[in-house]
Length: 163
Image 1 (cartoon, rainbow, N blue to C red):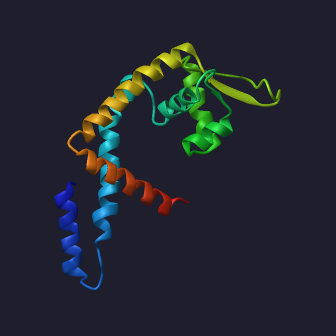
Image 2: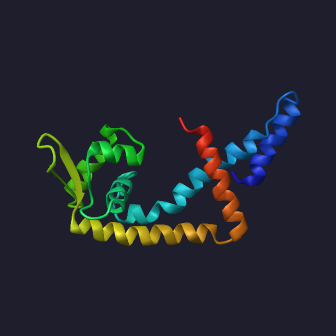
Image 3: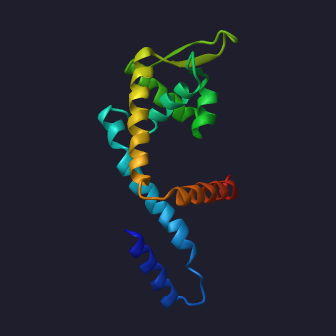
């Protein structure tokens, strides 16, 4: 589906149900379509690195923390907007690959922290460079003015729909 198809869907609804305003589809429908297209466009470097969905999010969340690149499962859950159960599954897969480790917290012997291994840091640094380059390439045809407006509008929409 492309922008013209979405406009076509809106035109069909206008014809079939003139009592309704289908214009929200021009925004929400496009955002949903873009989310799918962007995921497909941005996913290949992660797949090539044999990372499943969400595993790069764990690595990136840890890397963004700075040295010593450690967080609890609860902190990872908050930063990634997923359940702690989802974090545990992802962390277990990353431990098996030697990209993260799980250890006893230095501040609470009952707690556990997840940390990047040197291999995890190296992979994350390589992938974030590719990822940001891919995102920049996708946006390159937008003017600086359009990017600024889009950032502002998306931030506003994010505040409005926040659960």
